[in-house]
Amino acid sequence: MRAPIPLGFEKHPPLGTYDGHTDPDDHVDNINALLDFRRVGGAIRCRLFPTTLRKGAMTWYQSLAPESV
Image (cartoon, rainbow, N blue to C red; front, side, top):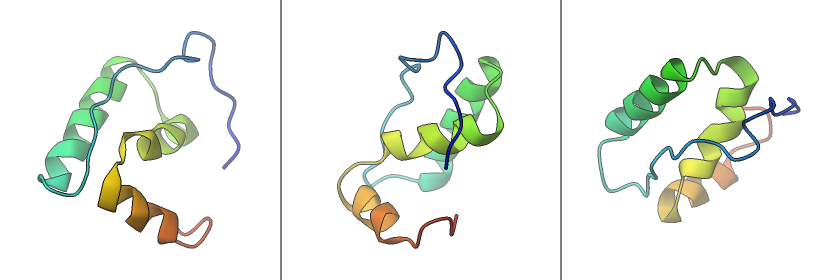
């Protein structure tokens, strides 16, 4: 996905990480709350989300077909 990173977001806010061992809904809710607060939407949310994944969660994400999410 191609979306320009807005000025001031070159270093994104700390979003926390998810490795597959806690509640994924809580993780997504936390990310959404922070990004809502920062008024981040659309494609930028999609680009930031994978940066929060670790271990098995990242392995799963990388196994998805391109543009399937």
